Image (cartoon, rainbow, N blue to C red; front, side, top):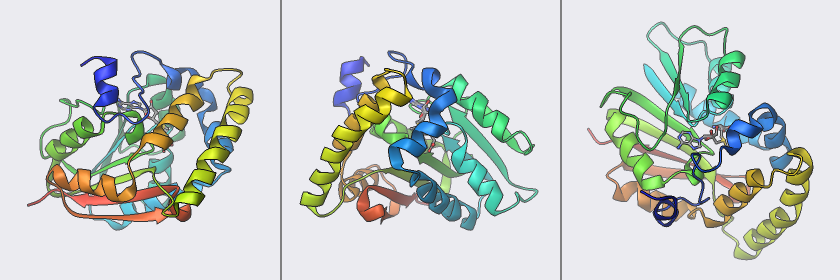
Length: 246
Ligand SMILES: C[S@@+](CC[C@H](N)C(=O)[O-])C[C@H]1O[C@@H](n2cnc3c(N)ncnc32)[C@H](O)[C@@H]1O
């Protein structure tokens, strides 16, 4: 599939890492950029995701596009892993994953794997109890990723997605996008020392990612059941939860 075909095939940000290794370049600054771009609010979103994950019953958790390991860090801070629990932390960027590995080095039951979420033959079919992806789906071809999720989840397994979403009041959403268009290039330019890719993809992804309702429909149409979502921060992001049928 060409880069352009991927973009048309529901890759909201039009991002393709083989073409632009932006995360490899910004890995060392990713955590500070997350704080700057979201004025620290991403911490609350991730705490909520970690709470959801910690509440679920799972033996094998796969956190795809794990980045610097923010979600897993919060999961293991909430609840000590039980003897039967293991985690796969995966990301397409070895540089991001290396930082995750460094931050999570005290936990021995985490396996780190460089994986492209679009195709993960390294993960056995029906082997994962819970698959999470946070702030990664908008830079991937959604349908392809979700089909892989369906394959690797065991029947009854859960999907948890944190992603950009829509504020239900259109005027407020438009205002938010205007604010992002003004602030992000300024903050991004300074923080990345002129690396425009980092915020170009983010802006594109935020603008073009489907509404919470539309994403729920997409997830349903791919065969998941019990699909629900909760909006956070007025709807700037949403957490979608779904289950693979038994
Ligand atoms: C915005 S960061 C999110 C990181 C982390 N989940 C968080 O919430 O902070 C997106 C991550 O997705 C990774 N990524 C991009 N394309 C990917 C792909 N095709 N497969 C797996 N990871 C990918 C990037 O390397 C980056 O670490």
